Amino acid sequence: MEILSPHRKLGEMLVSLGFLTEEQLKSALEEQKKTGYKLGEILLNSKLVSEEILFAILAKQFNIPYISLSEYGEIPQEVLSLVSDKIAKTYQLIPIEYNSKTKVLTVAMSDPLDLVAIDNLKLSTKCDIRIVVARKNEILEAISKYYEKKESIEEIEKDAEKEFSSNSDVAIIEDKSEITELELKADAAPVVKAVNYIIDQALSFKASDILIEPQEKQIRIRYRIDGVFHDQKPLHKKLLASVVTRIKIMAKMDITERRKPQDGRIRLSYGDRQINLRVSTIPTAYGEKVAIRILDAKALILALSELGFEEEQLKLFEKAIKQPYGMILVTGPTGSGKTTTLYSALNVLNNPDVNIMTVEDPVEAVIYGINQVNVNEKVGLTFAAALRAFLRQDPDVIMVGEIRDKETIEIGINAALTGHLVFATLHTNEAASAITRLINMGVEPFLIASTLTIVISQKLVRKICKNCRQQYKINLQQLKPLGINPDIFKELKEEVILYKGVGCDKCQDGYKGRIGIFEVLDCNDSIKELILKKATHFEIKETAIKNGMITLREAALKKLLLGSTTIEEVIKNTFADEIQD
Image (cartoon, rainbow, N blue to C red; front, side):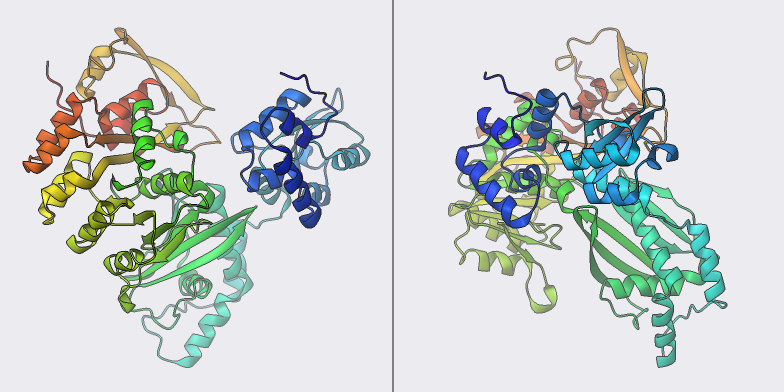
């Protein structure tokens, strides 16, 4: 390989290493002139170069290490005070460490080749600067966290106490003056700050859901983090009507209606990301409850290798999605990551020469190049109606957000029979059950056998925090009740090393993040024969296991033995397989 000089420009380096063509670099440089964006940012946004490749080249050629700010921990105030908020925001950087003996300031940047920023840092701090690379969105989040003054929830409540002297909660709004008063309170600074605080905290914790629940004397706030709800500091009950009204206004909902459920959406920016909030309200005994689902488009689309598939499972999935026609079913309970799996697969297929159409309820994230339709039953736009219309639009790939009735699945199967690749989801707890569920819905077995390629069942397990992970030993005999299959885990010794998180300031109870566990049922000839015979799901599962299918429990155990998750997560999320002696 050609030895590259550290003084060469980034674009030239990428071309020399074969990651870019001359034409691609020229096009990116022209866009840079038009937009003023940094070259690395343009290359990442256009997906010409992956973040891993870009940072790896920077690290190797310029000896610049890469760090994850989300796992870095708290930055001391004395370090932050060395760099002004103006410089941090202008050049999108964050100071993280300072060595007072050597006077070296370590700064995280998304563009470590920005010499103007480095020179200004040297002049303003009078320090030697050591650069590390971090993701742009993490730097922007850190700037927002450390440099933008945020009031505590206690301060917000005190302001609200001063502004609102009486409890304005009413069961039914009948008077126009009450509507006007609620609107004024919803727009008042303390209420705006309270709602912004609730949402901002949830985003900083990487929560997937927010619950605002009225109790007798207070408002309970809960965030779902890595699939588990955690209580936050409650708000005074006096703020309920104003907070709910504020959220309704943001979500373009009817603030005069408090007697029946409503749905709405909020779109906002957080760092360099666009976040969608799906809002739902429902009346309860103590007032309206609000549930907010946080949808981050970037988090919903991952590389297939990042989802958690075992090696053999990934090969089956990749083979199935590259077929020109057929049906792929993804099953699992609500919140099991089905949408992420489907979006990630569609993203692989998303090319200019492919016509992809989806029908969803609702559309979780808008993906460039994919035609996405939102179900609207009020006007007759059901899953089945959308699918019938799709077939007149000449699609190559169709995705059905959820199979709810016989009509929808039959149209989907007919689409698969006529040369379309169809993705669909179904609510079952294991892969084999999906087949018997379709038969019970009245679908002819020969149609299922003719079209079904694979069935994927999935769940999410929490990952152990890398920062506070500790190992411990356990006897293999103690693991056998979990369903350890001796054929799969042949290399295990009598004493097994496992891991657990003890809890730290970077995680929640020793866990940080989640990863998928999968059961991939390959619908080969032996499975198709059982489908035609209307076999039970037990018979189908037994045959699939003999064919080499890894069950959900086995997939979870593999994650356990790799040190990714804990025994508690394995037991909570999967059923033990019947292992014959």
